[in-house]
Amino acid sequence: MRGNGEAQLMTRVPRSSGYSAAGVLRLWLLALLILGPLALSGRSGDAQGLTPEGHLRNRQLAAEAHETNLRRYTNNPAMLVLPGLVADRNSKRVEVCVERTRLGPESPCEFTVIAETSDHGYESLLIAFAKPSDVHRAIEFIGLKPGVPWNPGANRFWARGERLILSLVGADGRRFRLEQLLLDRRIGRTLREEGFVFTGSLTLPAAQGSQARVYVADESQPMSIVSLYNSPHSVLQVPYTAPQGEVYESTIVNPEHRLPEGVLLSLILESASPDGAPRIKDLVLRVRAGVVVPGEALTGVARLNLLNLELKDGAKVLNAAPSLLTVLESLARLDRKQQDCYLTVMLADDVELGDAQQLARVLSTIDSDRGVRIEPPPAGELYYRAFTPDPGLLDRKARIYHPWELSLVERNGQVAGTLHRIESVWKEGSTVSQLQATEVTVSGPEEFQRALDREAETTRRAGLRARPPVIMVFAAPTLRYGALRKFLALALPTHPAVHVYLGGRPGDSP
Image (cartoon, rainbow, N blue to C red; front, side):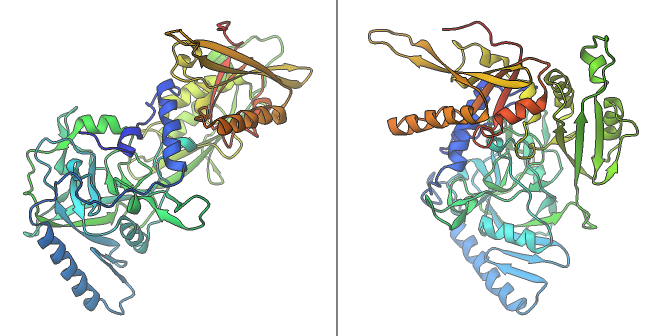
């Protein structure tokens, strides 16, 4: 059984060497959900009729515990008491009052913990008697800073944040890891005991043009506190790649670790680093063009080996020599058991696109939770996956939407472009649509941006859905990255998904 809203749209792009066409469309729809005006859902709390037996009694017990804690910790600055939870700054521990849902053994599960006001009890393991934003506040109180949630619309394909270990304590005092309650039936084992990432939920304007902001996990379904898939709308989530569709199909309630319906439990949240040391390690890879000996026609790996690469951890250079091999060796030496490595890739303007593509293919093989997590690019730069584009987008007749197509040519040091707008047109009496292309010459970034603005205004006035913010670029492999970056600079804030194809545009005119 599937939910609505986020459950229909929150599907990640597959981890591959490039963006997939269907994945990009899903990201575009997701961006509409995330970045548009917040549509607050009704707080039914039991839309599916699945409130566990004893829920009212448990709510009363949670309320009584809250009153007791308020009295016990009055004027104690090391303790934070909020409805449904208590946080201890000295022990760096948060305790949340939760109850077991009615979800039975081997039932599909997407959330481990949801708020009491959520209507997703039919696919959740535990209900918390604390608000998502209060859980967020409590984790900050014990000294952990929130990270950044997964957000593909901003080229963030990895949730970023410090890890917490989540455990459950029953009335008998027995304690066990939360992951033990869930089974990945693809491998026949319980979930990897790697904790959960504190990203915090996105906050959005409460209304169009409003300065006030709301915590999405508090106000909009599914009101998730701990999600088993990558989501921008949860306080915590798993620290690895977990597309929603795969999680729903594969994650089930562990039949060998049963908790009766309605049982009241304490959920314990503790830092994965007992000494308080941060797990996150930020690395920067700077890439500059190498020196090619005149007359040598180097291609492929031989040319890639000439690139000048520098891997830095803060001010410290990690690779002994400026080569790709030494970079990979330096990355291999990092302690991934104690650290989560995030890598920012920065290309110099003198790097040729052909070399950028070769490097991107190598980087895609190490972009993983077992390798390094590649960060979104700095403002005004292209994401590295732009250079490993989706070949499925090239077939105009087969693709499910039509991005902008931009062909770039460099002459005498100047770059000019031809912009193609492709549309599916339904003619009267026809049972199939026909492709129609409109060609516009754009001499520079300003003309290119004006063309995009004209299209957006025309679409808005006609009341039509905007074209997906995706640009297909066709350019020679010898074009330098700086020339491409400068041509796209004005468009990147609104069109962050770029696919760079080396060579001319295929002659598949409609």
